[in-house]
Length: 253
Image (cartoon, rainbow, N blue to C red):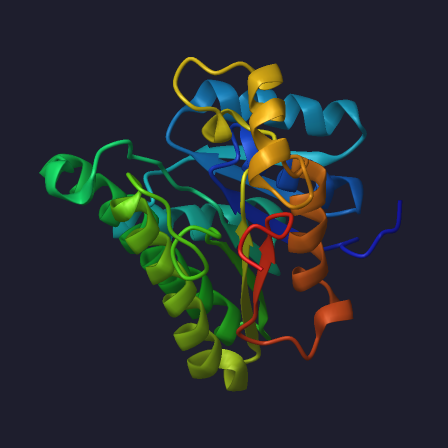
């Protein structure tokens, strides 16, 4: 592995499982000191243990991204622990779906907006405030191919929330590139996580389904999505600003 992030401090939200965990592991493997954040301590501790087992450095902090004080505290604790904040990945998100728009429970809507949209906004504000005062940095938001790129029945609330992440990314990128803060998004499609499984579906059944639903014929691995995130956060993408990189095997092509 390379050491593109040697000496850098990286914050990853929603890092207790799935894509967030894979992203945290990938940054640690390339030399970063990683703060993993989420609402529940136990899975975060598991992520830290996995990073340390591969020789990396990490710390876990709990925070609810829908609460501004907790997000500001998360950035502060990251800097206290590792002395700096160079990269942030705003991955924390939830899925609520399965019903047509007219039957979407109001509480599900509020949960989607509070975490997927307001959570990203609050994280961006706290991260940018620190970065622009300390020489800049890079931020990658995790959106989705559902929303700005494609739609599916029964996912209206989620699609709206992730389309908002794409819009927030572009707006923030334009507002803050002159501050030295470079902001982009990755929009995954179905990946090898529990979120891509339909209720009661096994991984084998998902594999059969994806052969018909995806031009690529399979879900993306979490390592493939993580690789896209690391590219956008690295100096290799120094002139990439406000991009939305879709990783969905051609579904939205």
